[in-house]
Image (cartoon, rainbow over all chains, first blue to last red; front, side, top):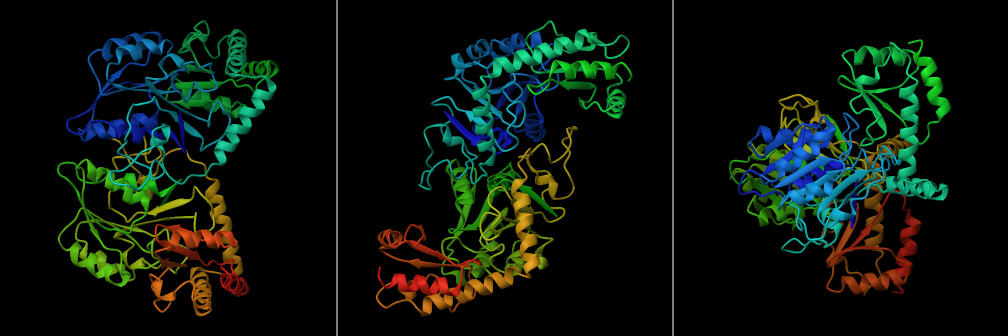
Length: 299
Length: 299
């Protein structure tokens, strides 16, 4: 069952609030998690309130086997992205991680996968928490994040919104995912999310179709890259690897300068440090990719 | 300086996250705090993570002196409503509480005062946190809550949104109130809040005028109450006491049944347990109060 929140950071805090308090909780995660989680656990680590083991998120193909191996050591929580925001690499086969997770709380951050790739975690729906939101590929804007809660896990979060249950003593909680509910919030984002989902359903467009469209544009883009410019060998996840999301990440020494030159030519990209990210969406066409390639030739 | 959040519960958690971790923090508050705070601290108290001292919120005139007396015992945090949601009673003279608070974090929950009464806490602006939001008297809908942060207090909340500073190690924080910032959020509510504030300013209507209008309607209402119906002696805060907000709270044995009868007559009221609350707003007229009194005569 699902519960909604204005942002995923509320869920980060509420999930962390379920960890043991009589000893320092142990967390297994990667070094490629999004700021909403990475900053929070780093801060708690500073005060010695958490012990955090971080597995390298790259190369993407090695990350899940390493996580699975580490998980057998025993942790209180395992937190991992389904698609990494710094590389676009996707983890596939999360059921094996669920199997290795033992008693650990398992959380999959699906923000960069939701509506970007087909997601089927039904095999671990009874085991894993899954969070995502509408701000990126679901095109719903802010304020429409959600958490799937497996039944029976974490019935009484210590960070407790007042919508999550009544005012009785002891504090009561909803039995479904509403136990992770916060408080008063603006539902506009949910209406937007519903509108987008209804619109896509009416067009017969699902996440698989969106992903296939983005992959085709990515392939067209990389195949047409002019010589001497963006170097396909600098792709963090090569186009030949299907385990990735809907953007391409180039790892470049001159990422900042290149981004500035692209911007001057009217080409909007995203950059995280030395990673230049180029996104391909449902709303882009092959003709637009060709125009982009033409323009890149003169940058 | 101010910081915004989708709801005040985010601020509750972020403020509580600043408490000491090497011993059980001591909190001084009242038994009349809103659920967003009351439920949260009750839950932490259950696990022995907080020691909470609750001063009776009623009678309203006694609450502040009792808080001041208790405060001298020494607490880590003092949390108090400016206007109580269960009674409408207002605490005036919070500067004396600030003086007695010692080293305690002082938080004033102004939700039921903001835009309902003139609020001037400038004397303790450098000492007290103040939070409120746009959902009630400011007529801005959900998603427009704010926290005033006194300079120097609580520079590094442990519950840390990723907008509150960069990703450096050690975790960096903004020096202004943005240190209490969360993450991605829908700013629509802030536009609504701004629109309402601009509209009121254009009309020359401020919180004092809103409050005076509501008090006049309340006085007209109570003076005209038909005999044998709602009993003015059951008012939690009598109309003769100016230290109150913009609603009247009746304490009634048959509050639930009466609310149902009123609803059947098309009269919308609010009820919290045995407290029937009747709100008087900027958008009500004396003529509407007279019509309400007429209709009450036949309930």
